[in-house]
Length: 196
Image (cartoon, rainbow, N blue to C red; front, side):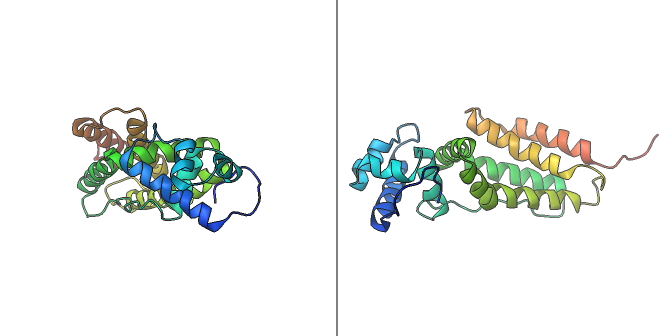
């Protein structure tokens, strides 16, 4: 569980009610409007019960996601033999996922939680970002068109980071912009074609 405060052992019924209330509120409202008061009211518990176990609303959301109360679709992974096509399809799928209403809500909540809670950051990295980052690195490193000595992890970070940055700063991830990002990354990774 994500928690930065020590307290008495959790009552499982109260814990479940809190995580279900968080899920239900986020289905109909934004993360900005989510509050510990609202969660407590909906769960039928005192606000102090929540504070005993979680340090913030973001920490509650992390547990709701990682404990399966808020289902999240699997992160897309690039596949296919043509690296440019595979990465473009992946970028567009990832963009759609984090641009959806629940995607926006969760990306803001989970990033906020990771920024202030080391345990949350580790759990989220292990569950989401780490596997995606490693899959993307492996896909880039295995492509015969790309330099084997390139920093494929840095390229993966550039692609993932750009999408998360746009989502968090509430900027549109336009197709042309993503094509430009992909062009820059792939041109930096491609093997030289020879001197004419």
